[in-house]
Length: 134
Image (cartoon, rainbow, N blue to C red; front, top):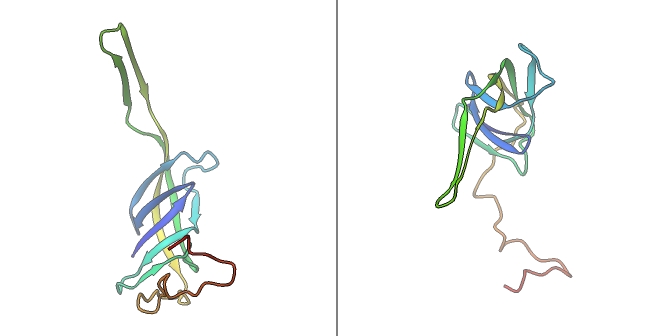
């Protein structure tokens, strides 16, 4: 099972049992459970794909907080040639390490069929709408 979910403006692609580094969530402690509900894409074991518009209903991801960690140090070095300007700054990002425990889904998730999806040309314009000059 492959899932793409959205958390605080970023998208993550995960499978069951994987570890994931997320930006620090201060309210969580070690061994807390987290539930992600904003699922954008879901692919099951049979190969069926479910694409949300904008979200897939009935699917959620359960994760367990392993630890609150800090990432590797990133060195930011700024220099301007022919000037005596050099700045060396280090930075370590605070992260929350989570393990994807389970992907839950209901059987009522509707399968997206590309042949039944209407293209924009098939949609009729209503009175007062325009198609931007084309």
